[in-house]
Length: 303
Ligand SMILES: Nc1nc2c(ncn2[C@@H]2O[C@H](COP(=O)(O)OP(=O)(O)OP(=O)(O)O)[C@@H](O)[C@H]2O)c(=O)[nH]1
Ligand SMILES: [Mg+2]
Image 1 (cartoon, rainbow, N blue to C red):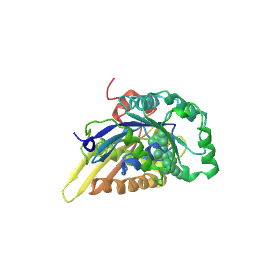
Image 2 (image 1 turned 90 degrees about the vertical axis):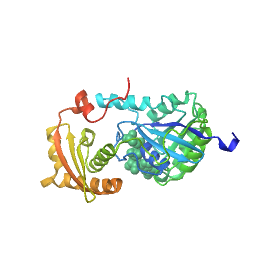
Image 3 (image 1 turned 120 degrees about the vertical axis):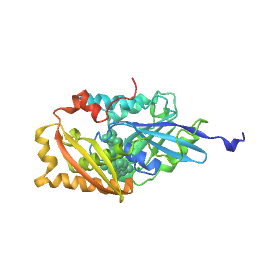
Image 4 (image 1 turned 180 degrees about the vertical axis):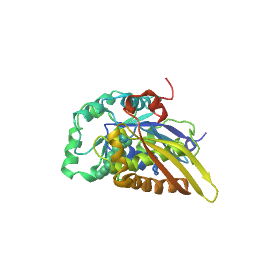
């Protein structure tokens, strides 16, 4: 085989504290929305796979839940999902946000600096920070253990600035390997899961305080009817009776708004007309209940 014919491929895990922009970065890297994003911490609850395919290779990115203390069974699942993504990883991307690199971010960066793998430290959200703040953060990375990283990249996942550099930097460090996924596959999430996530995203955007953290979405039924219409029935779980009214809103207005926004995104995803029926259900303390976690898909694949 000639040099040119080498096909490079591998897995790159994206890790970091909550809300630093990991999922936004995943979407930017693969060029499609495969992970939901919100301004609330702990949006991502499991590992989200995104594939970047090129003629000369493939990188499989694994977005993960933000690293933070687990306060319930869901939190424990989220942490294990984050660490599971490291199994078999060929590279790691650690993300922090410019202007808010705190001691907990530094602890994460230090912890992963010891891994014997190609690793990149991304300083994200530089579009939202002043030049001085970015320079100060970069300066603070100018010492051990930050020197263990192959590169420290200032970036904006939101505007796309720096994303190409990250892609090629990682690609150059990927081993020779197989095509793990067909070229037209960008994620391994089934359609029903993408739909559930889009509904959750719209709920997260509109809800405040502790309510968004207790939202779970279960797709009950998807029916593809003739004439290009898909009917989707979904349950929106809340973890306390008091949250039901908040999610419903005045005369159902909040739920309607969430439903309309989700429907528009789902119609784009499925390329059909969609009728979306949402029901709000109370599942007391579901984030600590194994059966509810299973229903919502928060179970480890193995082990
Ligand atoms: N200004 C700016 N905002 C960003 C950037 N990247 C992400 N954000 C915003 O930061 C917030 C969090 O983004 P996410 O991608 O959901 O962050 P995450 O790290 O995946 O968060 P968790 O899933 O909760 O761990 C959202 O409001 C994003 O729009 C960026 O480069 N610049
Ligand atoms: Mg996320």
